Image 1 (cartoon, rainbow, N blue to C red):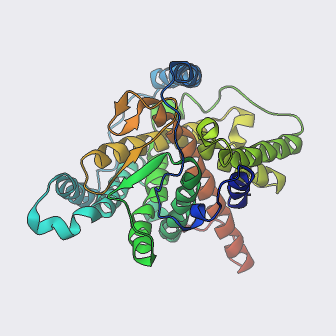
Image 2: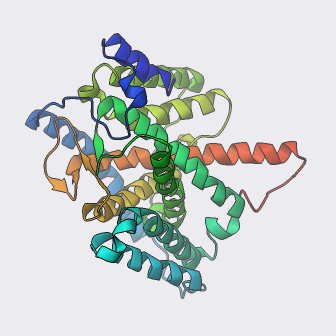
Image 3: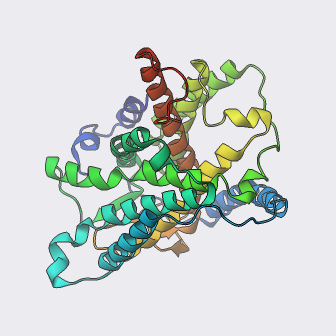
Length: 362
């Protein structure tokens, strides 16, 4: 479904399938629609209708926070190392020294590895533990999984053409490996940030017991979600300008729906009991990382630009302001993949006879 339906869509639209399989990442095959105030307004109202109640609920949680206690855990030494290397990588990414020119396009990876270390340090400072130290095997597994994860979105971008890279990449194995290394930092960054934010007062107190959405006949709803999401993936190959936002929603619905059908927990399971903390912390982590992705991209040598139909206006860095809403479901997708990897890892340990809670998985 994830790979084949978009190809079926472009085939139904009468466009050549081959160019969606052979062109380099970021190649744009779509002539995008111009800016539309009507579409901008509709999208904007929908986004605000979702965000404003969540912001109000978060504010209530912040007001209910416990009195601030003296922190038992100082910021770790390795967190300071990450902060130092991150500042150096940031400086080098935004400068143009001749002697550094062979390496200028490769600053993304050390910058984001430093970010991951710093965020784990913030988690450790807040609660005395972090994913990097508590679950090292699972943490390391996230890097290769992240490379594959983001290549999937590069594949979907062929059908909607929402972003492109400068300088334009050449196809081939050398580019594949040079791109996979920075792609591998996406899941560790988002999931480490999610762990840090999950203990923030506005999330911990504001969303642990709120609106309950407990649907009758969950399997029927799961089948409906998988079907609708599948049609959405098919549709982005036919009407990319109108359905481009489904690139961020459909994979989440398919994965969550299949987890429900297989009897597994999914990233949305908690809301049946009114516990929205995983949903909110994951979405907030996606948006938090998105801000840094866009900011650090802005003055970097190897960078990306956007081509968003109907709403491409009022940019913050390179991203049109409404485009930041896409980071909310993206954070949920990162959490869903992390949960799926954890489930698979635990099953593998169980089959080998390892019982009980394993510190490498959590």
